[in-house]
Image (cartoon, rainbow, N blue to C red; front, top):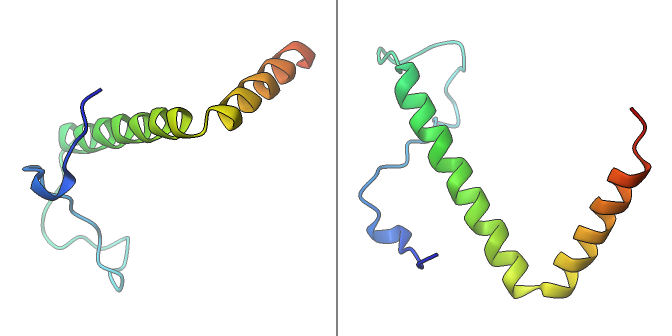
Length: 77
């Protein structure tokens, strides 16, 4: 996966204001498609960050994989 320079990222990151009431909107009705696009981008960035962490800390990643496998083996339906 190529490295990305977030400073030159053309897509704007819009964060809610700290003092804004979550129930009130400022006149812009966010479309469902826009929300899904932002969510997809967030999930891609999250997956990329996890892959990077696993590459940088292989011992921790291996331990996490083993723990997860153990949890799955002992899970009861």
